[in-house]
Amino acid sequence: MNRKTLLLPAVAGLLAPLLVACGNDSADGGNGGTIVVGTTDRIEATEKAPAPLDPAAVYDVSTWNVFRNTFQTLLRLPRAGSQPEAEAAEECGFADQRSTQYRCTLREGLTFSNGHELTAEDVVFSVNRMLGIDDPGGPASLLSNLDRVEAPSENEVVFHLRKPDATFPHKLATPAAAILDSEVYPADELYEGYGITGSGPYVLESFDAEGGRAVLARNEAYKGDLELRNGRVELRFFDDSQAMERALRDGDIDVMNRSLSPEQIDRLGSDKGDGIDVVEMSGQEIRYLVFATDDPVAGRKAVRQAVAQTVDRGELVRDVYERTAEPLYSIVPSGLTGHHNSFFNAYGEPDAKAARATLERAGVDTPVELELTYTTDHYGPATAEEFKVLAEQLNDSGLFRATVRGVPWKTYRPASAEQKYAVYGMGWFPDFPDPDNFVAPFFAEDNFLGSPYENNEIREQLIPRTRVKEQRDQAVDDFVRVQDIVAKEVPVLPLWQGKQYVAARDGVTGVEWALNSSSVLQLWELGRGVQD
Image (cartoon, rainbow, N blue to C red):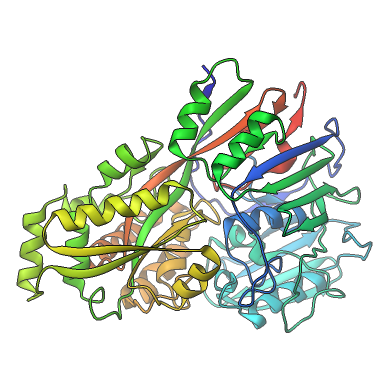
């Protein structure tokens, strides 16, 4: 049988006080050659998003996968596990007892792909640029707790935080803290087009948006711990997963990732003798509904609660996703510290009678008119069927008159950020494996969703309190409280938690390490032939 299940080390664990140090900084290794990776993600410039490869303007997993392979950050996520490791830094650590001052020392001899020297001033420039531009589509919110950053010397950087934040090292490991060349990137505006100047393990050799391909070549000047097992990676962007599968079977690509349909996973994993393997891994991808809480209909709490009482997650994962996902009853997925099934505890199994009583108590007339909006080309081909089933579930209860609308991602993302949809679907791949990353991006001020929903207890008490706890198990009670509040008020409705799949042709090595626990595509792990 061609389908393999890989059990990676659990990502849940304690966040100990961080002091990381580098080892061998050689980028040698591997046996060269080009690995061709297929994906249905698209990266393209639009009128509203003219800078698709500027870290200040982009906050999505597909482009971040390019960033993580071409830019360096001071720290990076490990091959497996949850503790950040040194990357551009030689060592980092909190310098005070309150976790408000964080210091890093850079490696020696760092250079950008254009030959320019990389210094602490470039780090300061990059962080201040991210915060100064504060693009609505970018990840500046991850660094919003930063009061100031300074470079006391050419190789030392000091971050001063407004409030204690034990998760700050994790945020420095994301492309929100990508290190840019201050001589190339403008300080107060976006860098438009398809160029990248970084210091990561690969350089962006070419990018053809119309042709749907990007080529990443080994960066011979890279200094870091990553061992590259190939000489070049070509990314090919497909319009749909069926075309991507054909390319895999024809040998035009070596690996396919995002977004495989459940039928493809079953078919590729079951076929024998086709020279293709499917590797299954655990993951923290979640899918959820978002409610515009200032909408005249979806803004009524009773309506949101009634939807929560009606939706049948079991049917979704069984009939739509064919058990490639698990029902999710919490905003924090299973496998992370603090996971708590708050939605199941609040609403139990789907119950139309209970939903009717909720609406009647609030004086809401039925059937309730709702439009469910989803993106047609970002989360995979099963999304359309998922929303069809969701609408059927609501309508079959007799309490709703739900319709469905599909919108292309390039229009969908900016419109959803402006809360133009009453009820819409989103997915989330964690920036780092900590429950904070499933709470703060959604419910803190200036949140990723652009949601008008506010809860002062979450914002002013619970999030700050969890960030003080360096030992993450000590924050469990506060995370449980957050989840219980969200289940009661339903600004979002978690639906399911997905597994991760990568399909590859025989002879491709490192597939089991191609994705880490946060769905980061670790291109350097892919090679050919025998691997250590």
